[in-house]
Image 1 (cartoon, one colour):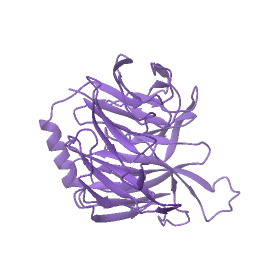
Image 2 (cartoon, one colour):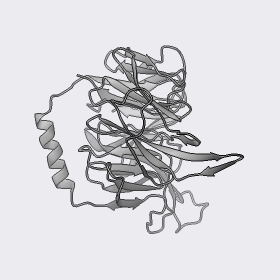
Image 3 (tube, one colour):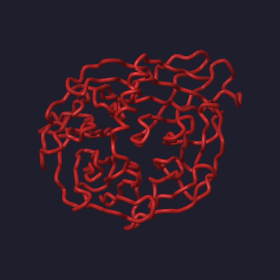
Length: 366
């Protein structure tokens, strides 16, 4: 089964990106950016498998972590998901901090963190509750926007409402659209917060299929501009006891064109947490949990699946598509050949701590 929502903007958007690529400098060196439970951010050189930089961040365990466009600064959701801190990866200096709370209103994030493509504004989602004496009132969630040059104790430049259950924020490459991803995928104006379009996820209607169920905390799409996540659905035209009833698929959302597609590729037989698209073959997807799976989503089939040494939550891929990286959960990043799924290396977290649900991004630095 498959489902696709098309947009007339594909050719124009892709032409603009290709034109920009032709005049942009080529940065050949990949780095992996991730965080640890001790509150440290680590930068690994993907070629040497060595630590290229580290920084201690205020607020304890790292949840979401992302890099500035030039790869020299990093921002992390910490403080028990109630604050964001920014550090210089070259010096280790903390230059930015912001709380999602204000006065008697407590704000908590849920791994929704995004930078505008020019690196000037930081966006996050605050799920808010107001303390009223012995009572707590649940408020509507909001996007909080910060100036990244505002220093320590930064305050929001502006806020605007966002749908409940928003688990990720992603930008279109040109910065004109902000996508709020969760039970729906809403296209927002990043300046005003105006909802420009909404696509269903939890209420997606397809013949003989239940709506897809999705859990995705990890942002690892900056190399392809394609959001991808495992989804799980049930066929409604067969008995629930039929082996063909439970289906595993992939939801893909194109951050350039705003197109969404859902394709099933196997009967549900394994748990899949996060996924990443091969930047040189967009029909090839890798997904991870206790196993590493290689999927031909164009052919709607599983290509290969191998057991891993332990559970991993996050998966990413090199810019040339040759190496797959699995991390999160525990204290190491494992490296696999993308063709054979043979293990070819590893990068332990130096202090031995777990990465837990921290993101693992592949970035490039000048």
